[in-house]
Length: 151
Image: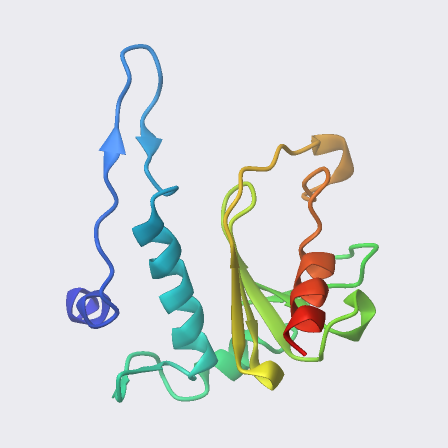
């Protein structure tokens, strides 16, 4: 079933490369991966429906966008549930915003109230003493700027 679902979204396998003295490097800086991440965000924006076919259970997107019972404590007040980070007014964004976070600066932010998905691909360095936040780039501020520019 999963193979049929990923085929429906037109996902392609990532290629790995191995350098002589380095570990495997995933090739997710390629344009096709960016498009795949955007399609992933659109799948959630459309409540799990892709080209008229239901891929995810009905209501799943609303489930992941609602705070779970046990919330992490972050100074910026964001929430978490079902492997998605949750944003809203405390971060200067509309209520109900949720995002899938990838490694070191890869985000697919779903903004249902604006019918929008923002994909950010980057490579951020992390400072472990400051928690999970990358130094420099701030996703909520970036998303708020994109929303302001679109109006």
